[in-house]
Image (cartoon, rainbow, N blue to C red; front, side, top):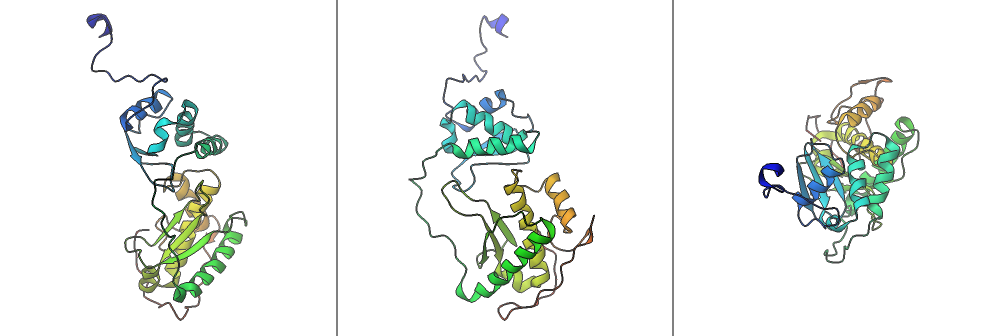
Length: 257
Protein backbone atom coordinates (compact mmCIF):
# COMPACT_ATOMS: atom_id res chain seq x y z
CA UNK A 1 0.00 0.00 0.00
CA UNK A 2 2.88 2.36 0.71
CA UNK A 3 4.27 1.75 -2.79
CA UNK A 4 0.87 2.16 -4.44
CA UNK A 5 -0.14 5.25 -2.51
CA UNK A 6 3.33 6.78 -2.35
CA UNK A 7 3.29 6.88 1.43
CA UNK A 8 1.61 5.54 4.52
CA UNK A 9 -1.93 4.24 4.35
CA UNK A 10 -4.10 7.03 5.72
CA UNK A 11 -6.39 4.50 7.41
CA UNK A 12 -3.56 2.76 9.27
CA UNK A 13 -3.25 3.54 12.96
CA UNK A 14 0.33 4.35 13.95
CA UNK A 15 1.75 5.39 17.29
CA UNK A 16 5.23 6.73 17.91
CA UNK A 17 6.88 5.87 21.21
CA UNK A 18 7.42 9.59 21.65
CA UNK A 19 3.65 10.16 21.70
CA UNK A 20 1.48 9.74 24.77
CA UNK A 21 -1.42 7.34 24.21
CA UNK A 22 -4.72 9.13 24.59
CA UNK A 23 -7.16 6.25 24.32
CA UNK A 24 -7.41 2.56 25.11
CA UNK A 25 -6.91 1.73 21.43
CA UNK A 26 -3.70 3.75 21.23
CA UNK A 27 -2.35 2.12 24.39
CA UNK A 28 -3.20 -1.29 22.95
CA UNK A 29 -1.19 -0.43 19.81
CA UNK A 30 1.81 0.48 21.96
CA UNK A 31 1.58 -2.67 24.07
CA UNK A 32 1.33 -4.82 20.95
CA UNK A 33 4.46 -3.15 19.57
CA UNK A 34 6.16 -4.07 22.85
CA UNK A 35 5.20 -7.72 22.46
CA UNK A 36 1.69 -8.09 23.87
CA UNK A 37 0.32 -11.45 22.63
CA UNK A 38 -2.37 -11.12 19.93
CA UNK A 39 -4.87 -13.06 22.05
CA UNK A 40 -5.52 -9.81 23.93
CA UNK A 41 -7.82 -8.20 21.43
CA UNK A 42 -9.33 -5.57 23.71
CA UNK A 43 -8.05 -3.07 26.26
CA UNK A 44 -10.33 -1.29 28.71
CA UNK A 45 -9.32 1.70 30.82
CA UNK A 46 -10.55 1.65 34.41
CA UNK A 47 -10.47 3.77 37.52
CA UNK A 48 -10.32 0.81 39.87
CA UNK A 49 -8.26 2.04 42.79
CA UNK A 50 -7.19 -1.36 44.07
CA UNK A 51 -6.25 -3.15 40.82
CA UNK A 52 -3.83 -1.41 38.47
CA UNK A 53 -3.58 -4.05 35.72
CA UNK A 54 -5.66 -7.18 35.28
CA UNK A 55 -6.61 -9.52 32.45
CA UNK A 56 -8.98 -12.34 31.65
CA UNK A 57 -10.04 -13.98 28.43
CA UNK A 58 -9.04 -11.67 25.61
CA UNK A 59 -9.37 -8.42 27.55
CA UNK A 60 -6.70 -6.39 29.32
CA UNK A 61 -7.81 -3.84 31.94
CA UNK A 62 -5.47 -0.97 32.84
CA UNK A 63 -5.91 1.97 35.19
CA UNK A 64 -6.33 5.11 33.08
CA UNK A 65 -3.45 6.86 34.87
CA UNK A 66 -1.05 4.53 33.05
CA UNK A 67 -1.79 6.18 29.71
CA UNK A 68 0.96 8.68 30.53
CA UNK A 69 3.38 6.12 31.96
CA UNK A 70 6.82 5.87 30.32
CA UNK A 71 7.76 3.16 27.87
CA UNK A 72 9.45 0.97 30.50
CA UNK A 73 6.24 0.80 32.54
CA UNK A 74 4.24 -0.22 29.46
CA UNK A 75 6.88 -2.85 28.70
CA UNK A 76 6.50 -4.12 32.28
CA UNK A 77 2.75 -4.55 31.67
CA UNK A 78 3.51 -6.82 28.73
CA UNK A 79 5.90 -8.88 30.86
CA UNK A 80 3.38 -9.05 33.71
CA UNK A 81 0.77 -10.43 31.33
CA UNK A 82 2.94 -12.81 29.32
CA UNK A 83 6.23 -13.28 31.19
CA UNK A 84 7.57 -16.82 31.08
CA UNK A 85 9.03 -16.95 34.57
CA UNK A 86 7.71 -16.05 37.98
CA UNK A 87 10.77 -13.87 38.64
CA UNK A 88 10.13 -11.86 35.49
CA UNK A 89 6.47 -11.33 36.40
CA UNK A 90 7.36 -10.30 39.95
CA UNK A 91 9.91 -7.79 38.69
CA UNK A 92 7.36 -6.40 36.20
CA UNK A 93 4.75 -6.11 38.94
CA UNK A 94 7.19 -4.09 41.04
CA UNK A 95 7.82 -1.69 38.15
CA UNK A 96 4.08 -1.22 37.56
CA UNK A 97 3.28 -0.56 41.22
CA UNK A 98 6.23 1.81 41.60
CA UNK A 99 4.73 4.19 39.03
CA UNK A 100 2.90 6.91 40.99
CA UNK A 101 -0.69 7.56 40.07
CA UNK A 102 -2.82 10.43 41.29
CA UNK A 103 -5.49 9.10 43.62
CA UNK A 104 -6.50 12.49 44.96
CA UNK A 105 -9.74 12.92 42.95
CA UNK A 106 -11.18 9.68 44.31
CA UNK A 107 -13.81 10.11 47.02
CA UNK A 108 -12.74 8.92 50.43
CA UNK A 109 -14.75 5.88 51.34
CA UNK A 110 -14.96 4.08 54.61
CA UNK A 111 -13.50 0.61 54.38
CA UNK A 112 -16.21 -2.03 54.84
CA UNK A 113 -16.18 -3.52 58.31
CA UNK A 114 -17.45 -6.66 59.94
CA UNK A 115 -20.49 -6.06 62.10
CA UNK A 116 -20.02 -6.57 65.82
CA UNK A 117 -22.30 -9.62 65.89
CA UNK A 118 -20.18 -11.32 63.21
CA UNK A 119 -16.81 -10.90 64.91
CA UNK A 120 -16.98 -14.39 66.39
CA UNK A 121 -17.19 -15.77 62.84
CA UNK A 122 -14.11 -13.77 61.86
CA UNK A 123 -12.20 -15.14 64.85
CA UNK A 124 -13.04 -18.67 63.77
CA UNK A 125 -12.11 -17.96 60.14
CA UNK A 126 -8.77 -16.60 61.35
CA UNK A 127 -8.05 -19.88 63.18
CA UNK A 128 -8.86 -21.86 60.03
CA UNK A 129 -6.71 -19.53 57.93
CA UNK A 130 -3.77 -20.20 60.25
CA UNK A 131 -4.36 -23.96 60.12
CA UNK A 132 -4.73 -24.11 56.34
CA UNK A 133 -1.68 -21.90 55.92
CA UNK A 134 0.37 -24.39 57.91
CA UNK A 135 -1.19 -27.49 56.32
CA UNK A 136 -1.26 -26.50 52.64
CA UNK A 137 1.09 -23.53 52.14
CA UNK A 138 3.96 -24.36 54.48
CA UNK A 139 3.09 -21.35 56.64
CA UNK A 140 4.34 -19.06 53.86
CA UNK A 141 1.21 -16.92 53.49
CA UNK A 142 1.16 -13.58 55.29
CA UNK A 143 -1.54 -12.66 57.81
CA UNK A 144 -4.52 -11.21 55.97
CA UNK A 145 -7.53 -9.15 56.97
CA UNK A 146 -10.64 -11.33 57.22
CA UNK A 147 -14.12 -9.86 56.94
CA UNK A 148 -17.71 -11.08 56.94
CA UNK A 149 -19.81 -9.21 54.39
CA UNK A 150 -23.57 -8.86 54.61
CA UNK A 151 -23.73 -7.23 51.17
CA UNK A 152 -22.43 -10.17 49.12
CA UNK A 153 -25.26 -11.73 47.15
CA UNK A 154 -23.79 -13.14 43.93
CA UNK A 155 -20.39 -14.13 45.32
CA UNK A 156 -19.47 -16.51 48.11
CA UNK A 157 -16.09 -14.96 48.88
CA UNK A 158 -13.55 -12.54 47.47
CA UNK A 159 -9.82 -11.87 47.75
CA UNK A 160 -8.59 -8.27 47.37
CA UNK A 161 -4.87 -7.65 46.96
CA UNK A 162 -3.07 -4.94 48.92
CA UNK A 163 -2.69 -1.55 47.25
CA UNK A 164 0.32 0.75 46.76
CA UNK A 165 -1.52 3.24 48.98
CA UNK A 166 -1.18 0.92 51.97
CA UNK A 167 -4.57 -0.82 52.10
CA UNK A 168 -3.98 -4.40 53.32
CA UNK A 169 -4.94 -7.56 51.49
CA UNK A 170 -8.33 -8.94 52.50
CA UNK A 171 -10.46 -12.06 52.26
CA UNK A 172 -14.19 -11.41 52.55
CA UNK A 173 -16.76 -14.16 53.10
CA UNK A 174 -20.47 -13.65 52.50
CA UNK A 175 -22.67 -13.91 55.60
CA UNK A 176 -25.48 -15.25 53.45
CA UNK A 177 -23.15 -17.99 52.20
CA UNK A 178 -22.66 -19.19 55.77
CA UNK A 179 -26.36 -19.10 56.56
CA UNK A 180 -27.41 -20.93 53.40
CA UNK A 181 -24.63 -23.47 52.92
CA UNK A 182 -23.01 -24.04 56.29
CA UNK A 183 -19.48 -24.06 57.64
CA UNK A 184 -18.12 -26.88 55.48
CA UNK A 185 -18.82 -24.93 52.29
CA UNK A 186 -17.54 -21.69 53.84
CA UNK A 187 -14.24 -23.38 54.66
CA UNK A 188 -13.89 -24.55 51.06
CA UNK A 189 -14.49 -20.96 49.97
CA UNK A 190 -11.87 -19.73 52.45
CA UNK A 191 -9.32 -22.17 51.03
CA UNK A 192 -10.28 -21.09 47.51
CA UNK A 193 -9.54 -17.46 48.37
CA UNK A 194 -6.29 -18.49 50.04
CA UNK A 195 -5.17 -19.93 46.69
CA UNK A 196 -5.75 -16.44 45.25
CA UNK A 197 -3.70 -15.03 48.13
CA UNK A 198 -0.93 -17.49 47.24
CA UNK A 199 -1.10 -16.34 43.59
CA UNK A 200 -0.79 -12.72 44.66
CA UNK A 201 2.09 -13.24 47.10
CA UNK A 202 4.08 -15.35 44.64
CA UNK A 203 3.73 -12.88 41.76
CA UNK A 204 1.28 -14.93 39.71
CA UNK A 205 -1.78 -13.50 37.96
CA UNK A 206 -4.85 -13.59 40.21
CA UNK A 207 -7.18 -15.60 38.02
CA UNK A 208 -8.86 -18.99 37.63
CA UNK A 209 -6.49 -20.26 34.95
CA UNK A 210 -4.47 -23.45 34.73
CA UNK A 211 -2.12 -22.43 37.56
CA UNK A 212 -5.02 -21.78 39.87
CA UNK A 213 -6.69 -25.07 39.02
CA UNK A 214 -3.48 -27.01 39.60
CA UNK A 215 -2.96 -25.43 43.03
CA UNK A 216 -6.63 -25.97 43.91
CA UNK A 217 -6.29 -29.68 43.13
CA UNK A 218 -3.08 -29.78 45.15
CA UNK A 219 -4.78 -28.46 48.28
CA UNK A 220 -7.82 -30.66 47.66
CA UNK A 221 -10.62 -28.37 46.45
CA UNK A 222 -12.41 -27.79 43.19
CA UNK A 223 -11.89 -24.52 41.35
CA UNK A 224 -15.43 -23.56 42.42
CA UNK A 225 -14.55 -24.24 46.10
CA UNK A 226 -17.73 -26.20 46.75
CA UNK A 227 -16.73 -29.75 47.71
CA UNK A 228 -13.71 -31.94 48.31
CA UNK A 229 -11.86 -33.60 45.47
CA UNK A 230 -8.94 -35.98 45.26
CA UNK A 231 -5.50 -34.43 45.34
CA UNK A 232 -1.96 -35.71 45.32
CA UNK A 233 -2.24 -35.90 49.10
CA UNK A 234 -5.60 -37.66 49.05
CA UNK A 235 -8.91 -36.18 50.15
CA UNK A 236 -8.50 -32.77 51.73
CA UNK A 237 -8.79 -33.00 55.49
CA UNK A 238 -11.46 -30.41 56.23
CA UNK A 239 -13.41 -31.63 59.25
CA UNK A 240 -16.72 -29.96 60.06
CA UNK A 241 -16.15 -26.79 62.05
CA UNK A 242 -18.22 -26.14 65.16
CA UNK A 243 -21.18 -23.96 64.33
CA UNK A 244 -21.15 -20.68 66.21
CA UNK A 245 -24.24 -19.10 67.68
CA UNK A 246 -24.25 -16.63 64.81
CA UNK A 247 -24.22 -19.31 62.13
CA UNK A 248 -26.76 -21.84 60.99
CA UNK A 249 -25.96 -25.33 59.71
CA UNK A 250 -27.80 -25.07 56.40
CA UNK A 251 -27.69 -27.98 53.98
CA UNK A 252 -24.76 -28.11 51.58
CA UNK A 253 -25.39 -26.63 48.14
CA UNK A 254 -23.45 -26.03 44.93
CA UNK A 255 -22.83 -22.43 43.92
CA UNK A 256 -20.18 -20.82 41.74
CA UNK A 257 -17.52 -18.91 43.63
